[in-house]
Image (cartoon, rainbow over all chains, first blue to last red; front, side):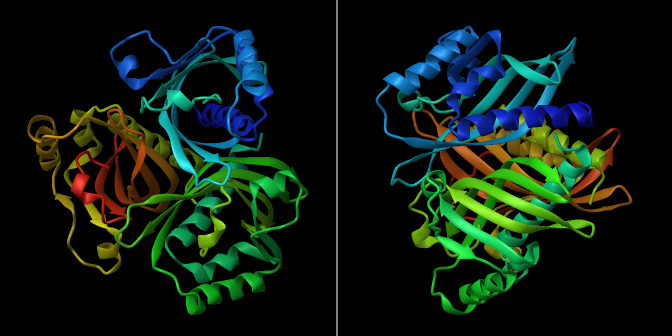
Length: 157
Length: 157
Length: 157
């Protein structure tokens, strides 16, 4: 089991990530990743069968920045609020400054004048590295439970 | 980042608040606030635009007590259970015994012989002060994501 | 309030339990319980009125093992993913190595090619005992909010 201090630091890192997304500060999102980070969103079914097909796949922080620009400038979509709930944040490995961290997520979505609905549940399978006093994602794998999500996947998870 | 000890104490304070509401011990709810506390429930839209209009606004513990009496004695409403889930509890400032704390909430509602549904998601923006060994809310701002909530907002969030 | 260390250990124990269920490692589920453990799933209504009627009642680890076999071998049911979110994990008593722990849970369910939906919310009322460096459930009482759950209750909560 990870030390109290490390667990606390990781939970705060995850909380900062969520806060950034839920506040809609999308342009800060890539700052949570190292330069050659991998960010993938993949259906649980594919992940379990070791199929490579991902719904989203970005292989650098620059690609994440491009994604942000696309969301903000290009895509036509109804305004919406996202709300992340995390649970079960666990550090599975901590070797040489590289951490394997897993967490359950639940993301809820609210469209204008609509009730809030469950948008996606799933699991983060992350590789986190230390960066000064903080952390950065070297890899974030978002393994989601329902394949019906992708159609409306606009904002990062 | 807040100390381990302080983070833990605040999380326990928030858990006690939730437990009180979810257990239906409504008459204990005002005890979580200082005497001149402000409790506001406000749509995210209004909060973002700095519009003052709140769905609920109470400006003292006595007003909260009155609210409890109103719920228990006056309002006609179908019995229901509320269930709070919290995530992302973060202490943003801690100066002179006054803390700014933020958290994501998800409240689910269950009406008799109905399935459980998402009732509200949003964010607590709180000012918390120390009180002996514990804490009290000096201000609780409940900023909720969906404007469809207010119609059925009976119990506190 | 429980010590930082104990709180952390208990949260990790609960996280391990959830991880096992959400990963579908059902055969490991009974390992979280002592041999003469009690596992009950009971509607909140019955619990509040002190009615003994439970939706599920198992009185030993062997009965839990039987349940797992039944789920895996016998019951015809559509494949589905479960996702547990926990909040408000609180140690209410810690005497002589026996702990009373309570937590809020939210379980979401995803059926194949269906959107994720809220499956059940409620509260765990647990008795936990120490076992070497870890813990085991001596009793897990799952008090759920909506009586509509039982019809489709296949996997453990």
